[in-house]
Image 1: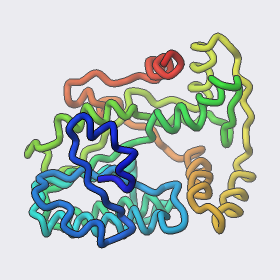
Image 2 (image 1 turned 120 degrees about the horizontal axis):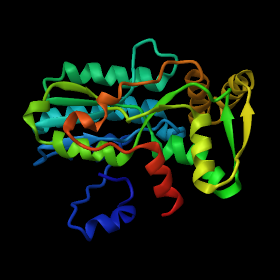
Image 3 (image 1 turned 90 degrees about the vertical axis):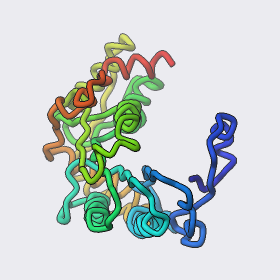
Image 4 (image 1 turned 180 degrees about the horizontal axis):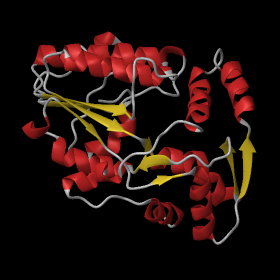
Length: 266
């Protein structure tokens, strides 16, 4: 299901059936799951604003999906959640994920909730390594010493290949992890090692990041949320047991070092 079918043209050539729908427009969701056995939702609006802000997509949009799945008799509803969601989490996005989890638990649907840490593609590369690769420098909020768990999207896909349509995973919440807990300073050093350079790191003090999160909120709540999350991540325990990686399915997980090599030489 996509908002813009032209962006899914390559999938059509592989035989994928494309359905047009928008989580912020209920009329486009009505009846969309007729004849569908399994729903996997990975849509989110963490960086959204305007009509695509988080409340419309992550909360109201997912309530629509769950209701439509129930009406259509969907056999398995797979929801991609986050690491450590809670009703009192300081970040609203995590509170919303928790709320949707609770709705699913009470929905009567066969659900599978997949709790995921930060994606390598976004947090290891886009927000950090990309500038090191292109400019030899990067920005880090805080001191950058707090270890965090990161997972590669292909590892999530590998797990989903086992979970999708498998009744053994019905009505379960599954925590997935990457195989390492590693700080942003260590990641920067690994990019430097792979590139044979010494990256220049600019550290943005936490108090300034807090101020920026407040200033951005009226204009771009998504950026404000990212800033606030970065401040939170500076001290929060975001480590996970590597046994929760795709090793739990007998699969080989992606390590940061091999991921860095893949993006540098792609």
